[in-house]
Image 1: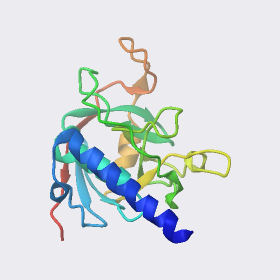
Image 2: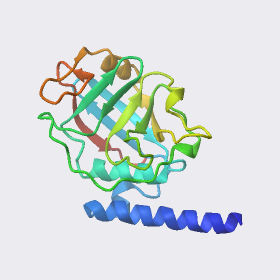
Image 3: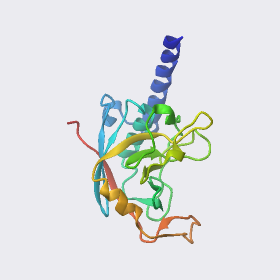
Image 4: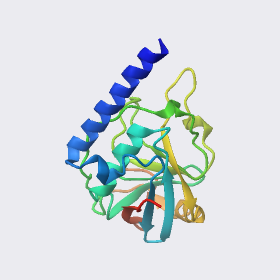
Length: 203
């Protein structure tokens, strides 16, 4: 039975990878598909930090995220939602609050054993458990409420900050308001810019 489940899980992973790659016409090598722990650099207007992704625990989520990265989809976008002692969220909008290109939604990997603890990165989504596509967030607290339980799906963690965690605290402390144009809550008063995300060479 375990072999049967593993067979279909592997088929699902392959199908999901092919779907993600075909969305933006990139190759598996472009996203370092054989690297279990790829690293990316987040360059913001307040500093830089290095994030290590966990492809072993969250292969679909990491492949999806890196597809957006290597295509430059996150470059010159906003951290559009900041909730002190909770999350810093980005990956959705450019500085004009126009939505960036969106690929297909992905399978929710929140049951992978990774927890929404301070310094981790996870996928934002809508109420539907399998609705994540491009938006992500950083936990700026230990957010147990975002982890899965036997009665609910959680939010899939897929990496953690390994250099300059202090930047997260700085991002989380910016002043926010309700944006009049969009009606969104928790929007930074001064735009918080993600200048680029770089996939770092393998070490």
